[in-house]
Length: 403
Image (cartoon, rainbow, N blue to C red; front, side, top):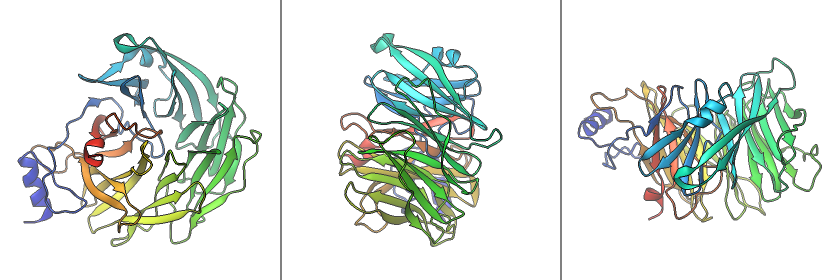
C-alpha cells in the first residue's frame, strides 16, 4: 500500500499519520476549524504574529474583507468582538501585533501604505470591551513602492518601530511612546529582490531588523540600540551567505536568556536538500546556522516559524508540509529544537491536519501564526493556521512538547 493510500485509509478511520516520519503512526483525529472569516489564509503573512495571551485568554487579530477582526479563545470556543471590526472598518486587516498590559498595537498592510492602530482593553472578565483607534498612515519612500508585509516592535524606552520591504528596499519608521507622530521612512538596505522581506527582532540591547537578500544570496541584520538616537543604526551584519541561503521566509523569537532564534527558508528547492535554516545567536556568541527539513520527491517543507517559551531550554519550531503532487494538501508539523540532534527537531509530529472526510487532499492548511513573546509555562501553547476558504485551525503545542 502506498503512503497516499495509507493516508487515505487513516482519514477514513478518523485518524492521521505523522508526515515527518511517514511511519503511519496514528496520533490524533483530523482537526476541524475553530473559526472562519471571509479572507483566504487569514493567518498569513510569513513574518507576522497575530496571536497573544492576556487576561487569562488567548486573542487573535485576523483580517476580514472589511478590515480587522478581534477574536477571544473562551471555554466555549473562539468568540469575535464585533465592536472592533465596526470601529476599524476600512483599515487593513492583515496585520502584525505588539501586545502589552493595556492592549495591543498593530500595523496593517496595504499594497502601498501601512496603517498603525491601537486596541485598548476596557473592563475585565466577561464584561471586557475594546476601544479601537487608528494612529497613523505610513507611506513608503516613493509613492508607488510595493509593500509585501510589515512588522511592529517596541523598545525598552517605549519607542515604536515598524519595518517593511518597499520596492526593493528595507525600511523602518519610528515614533515616540504615544505612537501618533511617526518619522519618515529610513532606508536600511537597498537593491534586494522585490520578493524579499524583513522582520523585526527584539534584543536585550535594543531592536534589530533581519532581512533576506536573494540577489546577494545572504541573510542580514542591522541593530538599533536603545541608548542610540532614533536615526542611528549599526552597520549590517551578514548572518549567512552563499549556497542559495536566502528566501522570503523569516520568523524571529527571543528566549528569556537573550538567545535570538530566526527561522528561515533557503532557495535550494531540490529533492534531497534541506529546505529550512534555523539561525541562532546566543547573547555572547556568534551566529550558528542549522539546515534542516529535507525535501523529498513529493513532500516540501516551507514557511517555518520558531517560538520560544518562558523556559529557555524549550524552544519549538514548526513549518508547513506541502505535497507537490497534490497542490490542495498541506499540514502543520512542529518539533522541539535540539541543535545536537540530526535534523534539529526532536519528536517532530503533525499537530494540525485538515478534516478531509470523503477524500484526501481537498484542503491545504498553511501559514502558522503564534505569539511574539515566549509562551507562558502554565497555559495552553496555542498556534493557529488557516486555509484558502478562511477556515482557521488551532493546536495546543504544550500537550505534545511539555509532558
